[in-house]
Amino acid sequence: MPNPLCHFAIHADDCQRALSFYQAVFGWEFRPWGPPGFWRIMTGQRGVEGALHQRLEPLTGTGLRGFECSIAVRDVKAIVERIVKHGGRIVSPAFDIQGVGTVVKLQDTEGNVVSAIQYLPGVFESMEAAR
Image (cartoon, rainbow, N blue to C red; front, side, top):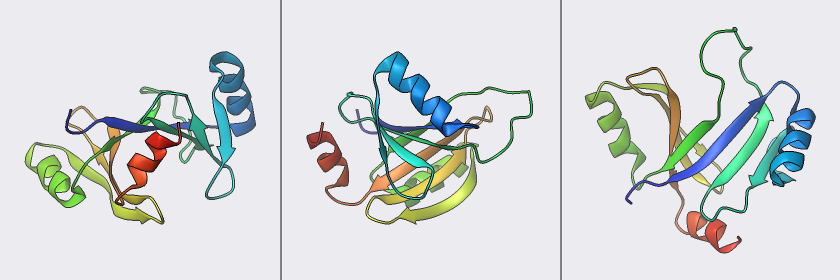
């Protein structure tokens, strides 16, 4: 499979409440990481990382509430070209996460937001090895 799902993010109004819920229900482990109010989620599934953080935009009462997923890609620039060519749009230009890689947020043809990430060499492999 050339572009596996590698990351999801849970946006929460009350991060501690959400953290407690996912620990109790699914047994996931949470580790503080990065900016304040941000946790890595260790689900126990090899090759899939998660994050929990404060909701960035208020809920409006309409639309889907769900996880934001990230797809591992070899070349973010090439993916950006393909997104636009096939009717998607760039929501947030590519940006670097220090020590991790380059991420671009996109909207598909149905209005769904997803991210694509080009990991720095060895990062994805080291995440898999840590499980």
